[in-house]
Image 1: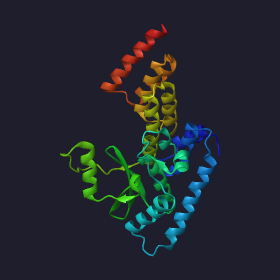
Image 2: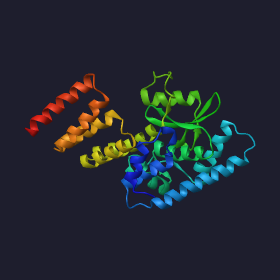
Image 3: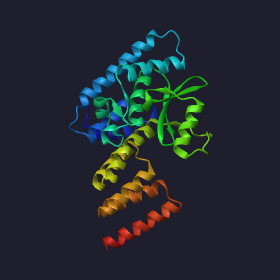
Length: 275
């Protein structure tokens, strides 16, 4: 396998439909934990894919509840994947290699494994950016089934989704259009990596947060907000030329608006620092 950042850069040039979500998340994990056993993790992903294909071939009826049950039996049952309630903020919960080793993780990290398995079987599936809780959906012709992979692949009914939303937004919250919009593969990967970036910044590791943001930009070079965030971090680290380059790239992507005007003000500050 090629050097991980080179692989991430290649992923950044791919159409979303071409991205192998498991392989891409593995590359992010290699960058984050270079001493971890990525080869064992890669073999495990391959084994999962082969097993779900084998199980899918035995299924008499390819209906969504049966597919959901097959995935839950394999991932939550046989391999014991579950959410980490005890050490939720542990950075290992967002690193795919360490999630595979520990069989514990954040919702989005577990979601990557579930999506990897579902897609290996040829089953349509996508991430769901539900408020404060990542879910996945298995796709049918005119319907879908939503699963909570943090809780063993629980099938989420409308009642379950409403209860989850109320826990997040308060008792007055109600289901509304747009809550179950599909996420692209690239967005799922960015959400995964954002957990690591956020935890580094919360720990005061600004340089580490910047490196993480730069890795995110490798797979999503047109994400304007990431360029702005990288500019802010570089500016705080007194890396003036790098900050200027990031801000200029942001303005190429977002030339107008209040945020763009704010970025221009920061560029003026940086220009004065160079004079």
